[in-house]
View 1 (cartoon, rainbow, N blue to C red):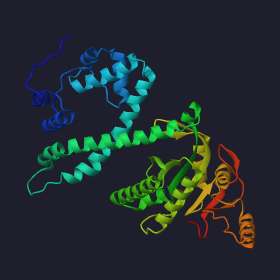
View 2: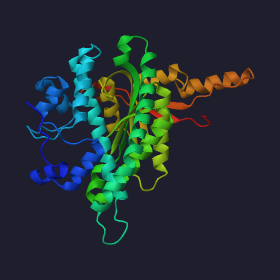
View 3: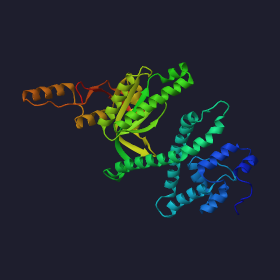
View 4: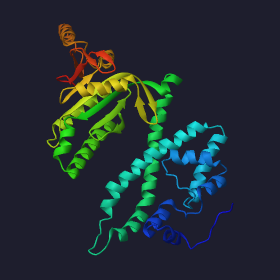
Length: 368
């Protein structure tokens, strides 16, 4: 089967298919290539089976298009590259599909955000009588190369940071199943707010919460795993970092009168990482602790508390801290300085995890 190059370009294709001509022009601008191939033709040109090509496309989040001529040279090249990694033995077929899926899911969310929050604001008609349609194309034309360069820069930075964490792992198993501190921060009473607030107000509140949380997590050395509207999930390599993030979140939100109260639950232990997300009992425990945490408070599990004590970020008890301070004063020495305080709470059953003993985490007076 040969590629059919008949027709008078994308506008003609759009007229035949009933698609919006501007949408086709924007597609051509963004993709940098014309529609030339059906899926079968693209797969054949890339030297891969139609079955494998379909797996890659679906993994990237693209809908089945039958045999419409909607693919470009870039699509062929992407297939060829993924298949080439498999043929060279650098990736298994399953791993190549996973690469396609993780990339597709991440960039799909980014693209939706940029269109919804960024592009719409920039394409407000600058003059009366102009339509958004008339200003969209030149704006995209100007922004595209800059956003592309910035995306590659951020990706390389994140890749370097992630690679650094992996090579520091103690062994191969730790690269996948690692000991991490995991925290959930949850807005209290969010469901009630959804019934009282207008959609635009609710959207602004969620965006402000996610932005503040993301900034605090990053600035204090943690990693934002995902946001869920009224909840954020983050992780840190050590309990002290995660504890500092949790308390800063509580303190920052408490000073913002527009925000509801916040509660945080954290756990420390083995965590399985997959496609940028985290899974396992430690994550489930952190989630359960969040649901029982008091307003504007942080609950941690026993393993988290023990880790803070081991690293001397918190005393085993306030009584022990007082004894250490008295002994240091007697010897004319400086007493130990602890950043955090821990107060054991009542043991309680937690759904699916048995009986747990939560600890209330606080910032100690005079802590740095």
